[in-house]
Amino acid sequence: MAEKPQAVKVLYCPICSLPAEYCEFGPDFEKCKPWLINNAPDLYPHLLKEADERDASKVSEQLQSVGISSAADVAASSSQPGDASSSKQEEVKRLPGGKIKKKEKQEVVIEKVVRNRRKCITIMKGLDLFGIKLSDASKKLGKKFATGASVVKGPTEKEQIDVQGDIAYDIVEFITETWPAVPETAIFFIEDGKKVPAA
Image 1: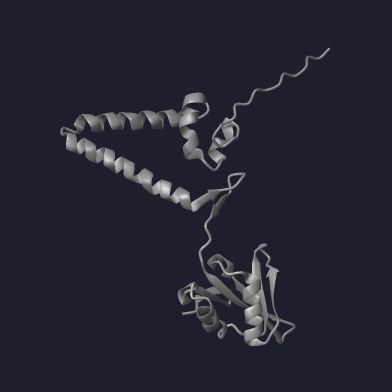
Image 2: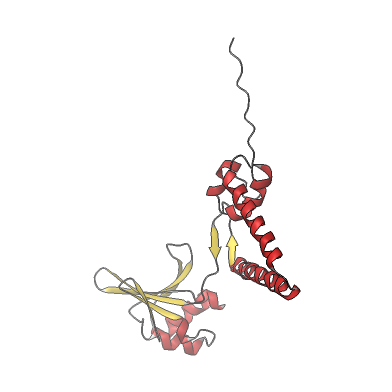
């Protein structure tokens, strides 16, 4: 009779939750390195060499520094890059699966779409980032320009305002007058596939 195959024990990284052999392909390999050096040194021998070289260079720097002030400068310079990376981490939000979600820029994007050769629709995206209710904004736009305006979900599943007619250039003044929170420098047009500032 054939022997039953034994189950393989896989070592998982607690930081990126991937098997240790696949940590280098994960989103946080730099954070995984200390754990891999301690728990799986045979998988990544080059990490041990890098760690030994870094330790050796730190020791040599400490031996070369004569005064206390120079050692304090070394400590201060080593702490500054960490501060910069922590501020970058505040801007970036991690999603499940290691995907990164960046904060959206506060900007209003206006695009004109032509349908059936003659009919135009002006699409406005990003008013909600300024704290404006899109339903109220669509009502005001419809009354001001005497057209149909509605809130719809765009192709990226974000809500946008569709206004019937070509009102792209008249709309900038209306936005800045009606909602002072939206500066004219934050309004952009999409022309020929390129984002162009309105100002």
